[in-house]
Image (cartoon, rainbow, N blue to C red):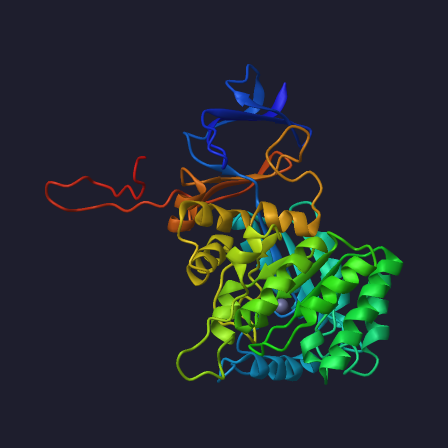
Length: 425
Ligand SMILES: [Zn+2]
């Protein structure tokens, strides 16, 4: 007998009436009307069964610290970085662990089962690194936490940061991070990209840099990043996060840049909730949106994911670990309101992000891990529109979270007694 049988699900490619059979934590069959018995059988009632959400860009060491030691009055990126600098010396490992575990609980409840988190390596004690390595181990049975060694204060600008970054990697952090636009000069920014890419190539690591998170169109470190990715044979292993300066760049320059990114197989991550609030702060009117060129990158064949980036921390007071909220914001900011565009925004918080993390066995197919989310929606677009309730979240074939269906009782004469938000199509 198998462990789990889900009957009558709709998949995100539109196939409906699909059964999914899992045993030993793996998917063993995906087909209409599977003839099998299982210890647990669940009727999906034609609703969407999606692979879990994946957040390709997050900061787990600062999450849920909103208001500590004070709130960000201006709401700007630079005050956020200054505030984080004030908070850092007062951090304790226990507090970081506790907040991170609480956030992971939120994530699992929202069907978010894989997160790439940057961890600041500029603190000489490397407290956050130790804390998040502990959290990574602790949540492993239910959530994949991938860590990026992130030199928040600049790997060249901050004395000793390169040593600490290497120490963090030796301690078990997975990915090489960077922040070239925060170095003291364009030349230092470019040099930091070279140094970090070479380090990654030597050690066989992935790279993910905060890159050009500015409205300055002359911030072109993404070009340098793509160049070194190609030079060092790191195709498909390098990611540029944010890339907001691309919003303000000259179109001619971008017409050269995007093909270079594609040829170097550099992934791009936009963080729509954060980019729309932090960019354009030096503008009066018109105010730039400051998100990177998502539809143009996708059309050129660059893999683009959306990240949550921040939840209740020095940079962002809101958020709940809901990647459908992230997808909805990305969809609006990028004006991806066509049918294909809306579906692509769902991919940006599932499949595209999984590719960046190089997750093993992701997706609803035979042989993959039996991780999925049953949503109270019939298709990906409806899921985004309704920020659909995660009815059941499965990890390795077991239910790890459940939320009751969203409904409302109506007390209106001559009308139905409850609301149905879906529109039958
Ligand atoms: Zn970030």
